[in-house]
Image (cartoon, rainbow over all chains, first blue to last red; front, side, top):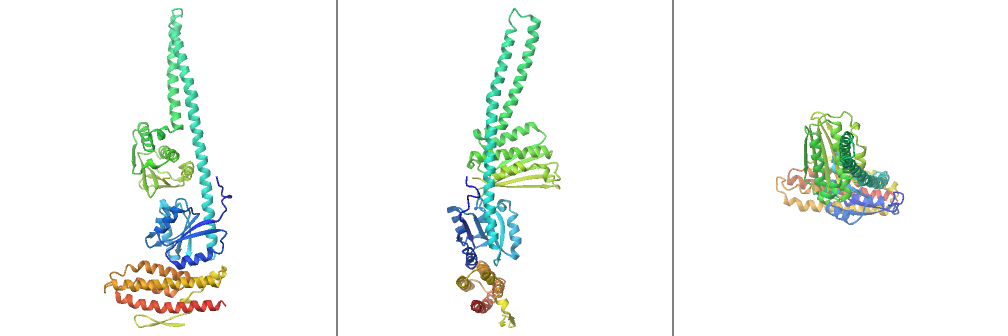
Length: 352
Length: 134
């Protein structure tokens, strides 16, 4: 893995503006520090998207208005590349409008003002550093998440193999004792008592087996691997329906979840699991809706619950969810609407 | 100070700072950009404005007398204004903005003349700025 400290080579910048004068002005600044970066220029959304597809950039500097679209159209194709928005002073509301779009806000790190100010170089350096540190953090979180999942998988496997085997053997032992009690040489009263104990023992073993199986399922979402993410989530919701029959559960999915690789699928499954658990634990809901939609290779997962609204957002345990979201290069937003008694968790992430 | 004739016949005075706010170009100089860099910027700016004016000339006949059809000039105006903001051509930027607000083809034609007049002053001011660097 290349660490942030290792990735100190010249950064690659994509500069997108349909105004050649502004591009030249910024180029004059950038050319002063050739050891720090190289750059490529584009004058339209189409050109920018083509360049993003053909090269790895550390930063994109984007004009808001372009002949064939606007900055948001490029940010959506920028993956995890941090973006600086070029704006005139009076266009800051436009910048804020871009930030309010949760599907792109994650990548917009700052803005630079036209005409260029002397601090522009520092803004650019800071944005590149931000992007590299975010990449590093995301890689670390992804590795930690993968290790965590692997540990869970191993615990699940060990539980299944060892506890499962022990419990099966114990069940056989009870059966043998029970069988031995039918021996004519055994005192009948003692035999009856022991057989009753064996029956209770076997019932306890069966209960323990069910508990272990459930724990193993929780630790290893096999359903994701076996049946796919969509079926696994539907199964999860069916289980919740049985556990909480008074709550109305809904699931809608317009995204093609088959496109998502197994590692991401596992993490998304955990996000849904954790989000649902939070909703059920903290909001005492009457209605829970899970929706998964895709747009421009971005997957949006929304979990909305109607019920008790949390006063403080912090009480909704989001740390783990944020870390998992971050490991997928995504962004998490949590909102409450007291008037509608609705809490909503929205996670937007790249599908690949 | 130079005089500027508006389409309504009134004259308004343009102060040098309004024709060319030296702030953006001075910022480049203070950041270590040399004269060659500034000459290049002026050249690109002039090409941009020339292209914008050519585009406006091309688009004007497509609009009818009531001004319907002037809208495609929006991108041209936006690009030209961005160029003006970049080099500090405040007055020229305003004239381009005024063009975008023209309601009729006649207004647009008159406003284009104003743009050309202020553009000439802007070029002179840039030349003077570069000369002052000597």
